[in-house]
Length: 151
Image (spheres, one colour):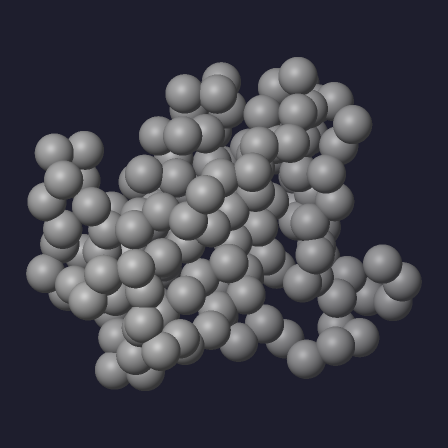
């Protein structure tokens, strides 16, 4: 990226799998995300299907906050199962929310989990949209993602 930019790299002594970047040449992010993510050729790209707020036992959290936290934990489990971590490899998210009323809970959930995963503030890119509904009426949020894991 040209112009003034912020680049945060982690994993000292290891190849950086994802370089998250923001620039002051466009408006600042509206939330917890970066403008871009550059993926290293040192890893394998992992496309993760949309995850919802259901726990491994099938129970669904009753609110948008709980569903968001669980969806992100599900994404972490998939990344970890493939040999990576969200902090080192999560490149992008696509977040679908079933109503505007759910947005505060979604933002709170993302904020809390990202504070654990990305304490330096180098967040993955994230597109968020409000949709008419998801696969089931009790689902309020679904998050699809792309990560990079060691190749």
